[in-house]
Length: 406
Image 1: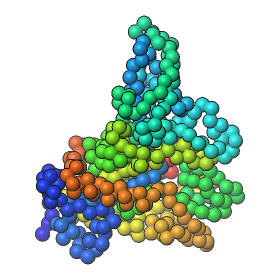
Image 2 (image 1 turned 90 degrees about the vertical axis):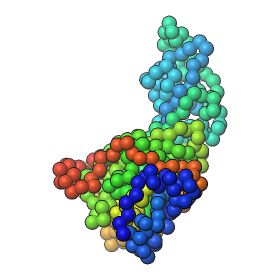
Image 3 (image 1 turned 60 degrees about the vertical axis):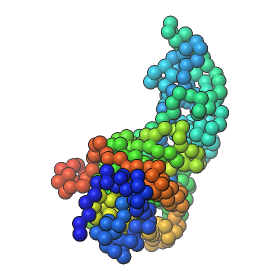
């Protein structure tokens, strides 16, 4: 018996407390035991999660007017610069911004102890943050300087807006050089001494909906411990990446732009990070519910780490110099085992993304839905996707190595 249900029907069950919700981990065995049709008939929603560094993140702030009013041209939060070229007291603080006084890599490798991601964590933690603003002064905005203390609950608005999150697959980083290197993928030891990867694998949102059949503009999500939304496809979105026979991208592919109210998030799921020798960033907690509209979507949600492969990339020479190719592919099952085989040797692996955190997010989102706190949304617009063969054939196959950074 074929399954064909709508988001409206699922929401009706959620409101009645009758929706069946499983995490992406739990549904794997169910599909193996019962098949995708029977599993789809018995499950309404599958929850996913990921919790890792996401550099392309930041927050729009409206700090409110001083008396007399000021039109900001420069702004600093705990010494970290925010972009002020928007409107009088509107700012954007990026997760990777650094204080002007930070030595950066002048003392190599730099420690990058405090940056934009840390300011965001401090704000969402309810801590006091020093705000400094400067202006050239106008007739309507005469003030030229402000120096005060702000807290998140005291300012007008704070909107987390992340231009590129939730990468659908990513590189496995290694170092073929003769010296240690410091990257956004961690400290890489020489001569293939270690390997880092950075997604949650089978729990990761875009692996469970590889053709973005249910995720689009307006999709309601778990973001930073609160409720957020998909705002658009993310920067460097590349749905034309080559795929496996199960539809899983072999290389970095889809991304999402996300938005949400910072005031209802929490510091458990937004953490400032310092990467030795590279810079500062933000660790973001993200979970997306997948409505099981039919058995095809259920089959996608049964993806296993064994099914997902990622390219091994040399960050000593190939990556920084935009050189084509990789050193081969490994599965997430291999990566999570702690060792991969490469060029005749065994290399220890570690993840920058917290799988335990991803699991906790998926479980939390499951509980929100089961309690009726969280309803699903029908996307108002589909995002660019390679779901049809004709799309794959008509779109140029761009080299993902030339479209990604961190």
